[in-house]
Amino acid sequence: MTGSGEADAPTRAAVAELEKYGVQVGYFASDIAATAGHAAVLDSIELQLGPIAVLVSNAGITPPERLDVLDTTAANFDAVLNTNLHGAFFLAQAVAKRMLARPAAEGERSIVFISSCSLQMVSVNRLEYCVAKAGLAMVAQGMATRLAADGFGVFEVRPGIIRTDMTAGVNEKYDRLIGDGLVPVQRWGQGDDIAAAVAMLINLRCFSPPDRLSMPTAG
Image (cartoon, rainbow, N blue to C red; front, top):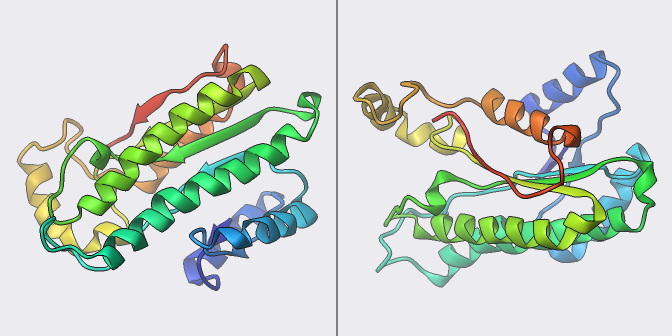
């Protein structure tokens, strides 16, 4: 696991839960937008846990301020793009290079990008987020095309309305909209929905040949 700051209580609980199942796990603090630090954190991960076989690119932030598209600022735009697109692209690039340096016989290699339905659904008060996720979808396509011949699985999952800290401020709004039929499943998506999709995708025996697959998830 990686995150932008020290491990909080939910992160520590997740690490402890995985350890109960005998899983090798560690938490590594890293700012994905600070691309100069990517090599160091990847070195730390591989030193403690061994070669990286799967990257789930799930880092993402909303704009520091929700501003109309005509009022937003360069600082707002850059904050989102630097994390959600620039950082995500170059971390995936760095991981892919490390994976390519290992013989393919050492095991399957996968990259899963978590984008968003917002890449197609416009929000005029957080357009930076929509732009970043649209760009990430193209990153997934480009990586899949480049790495397919090397036996990689590169996938993109596009969550819908997922109950997370990022949506906490609009719970009442979406409770009402979901109740009025906004989404066919008539419920919020949950983090477990995303995890289930990712768990299936990284089993490359399900896919032949490795390719790009966009998967909308609950919500």
